Length: 354
Image 1 (cartoon, helix red, strand yellow):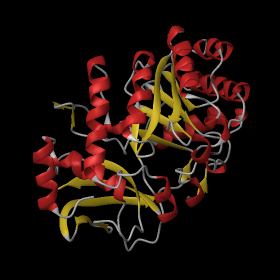
Image 2 (cartoon, helix red, strand yellow; image 1 turned 90 degrees about the vertical axis):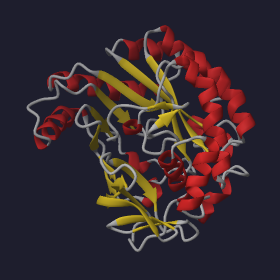
Image 3 (spheres, helix red, strand yellow; image 1 turned 120 degrees about the vertical axis):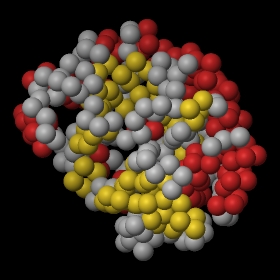
Image 4 (tube, helix red, strand yellow; image 1 turned 60 degrees about the horizontal axis):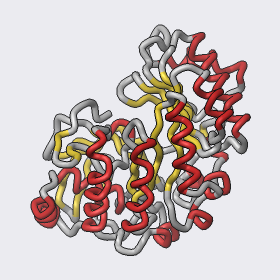
């Protein structure tokens, strides 16, 4: 992927991309060698080239073939220090956590760790700290989370994201989302209710979701080829055409729309051919995530060529060609595996990185 810091600078110059973004793409794709005894860790990174900008990452460790090495103090690229590491902790499945300061709250409120369906997901490697939150407990949990974060209530929270893969049916998801919205109101939050899922698809379901107040649907598309081999059934049964139609239904009802997509599972030609159809039904920047293989078995699912940095930069540029004209832009704090951190289509990205 990258041989050295000199190689990094050479690639960045040839592609006219800032070296930090090239490094982060390679790091997410390669994982790291580490003396730490966990398969995945989340941590704060300050790159030596941009020490004033803290970044959060979640990274696969134990990859002995990686050019990167990480310990509890620093990140090295083939022996040369490139950043400082702090705040290392297990990437376990927790009930709730913040992004973008305390403006966005993410809930794993339906026991995310019980979902083990998609081959790229690290849930089977994680410790479980996320029991299902029952309706009677929801308001109290949100209140306690606010208090533990030094907040009197959740009035300043802009978005509450429900991020879980354990809803088997649309009506069960909508019942849970209604409970979350009620608990948000009890705690003074009138912000957007955001749902990552593949089960909310029907016109009737969209009507109900739109009635829950400001609503944002992120459809978990993930990939377009080999879906039956890679994805759990509730995702795999949706065709690319089904997904476009679902997002169109949501957009027609005033719901904010986007999708998740794992970069590295599809050949570039197939990816671009399908992604082109998603442009007109997407109202905020999609969540493109660099594929992380957590062990050698998961390397099998990489599309040929995606073990090189040139493949990833070609894919990055192809996505920019599709989505840059929309005016939508990525934000690192939304997605720690993004192919974009500091620049996008030659533009500097502004805003918080955490």
